[in-house]
Image (tube, rainbow, N blue to C red; front, top):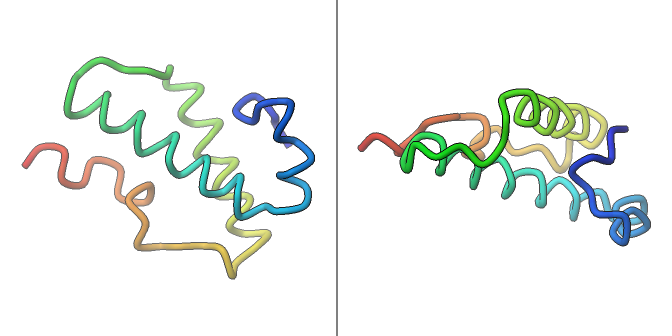
Length: 82
């Protein structure tokens, strides 16, 4: 697991409660998408986005009960252009 997006003090919480880290990654990606698409001021590099997105995918695969296919992260630019 790449801990780049997880603050050191939260590592134990992530190990005990993966839903917390999954929610954190979703919010991180949604925020980044908003700034990228709506404000046209990226807050993450494409590489950072890809790392966080793939980490979220991996976690949702490992914990399918926590997966949410309707979540905005899976609809990258939804609504940002409307």
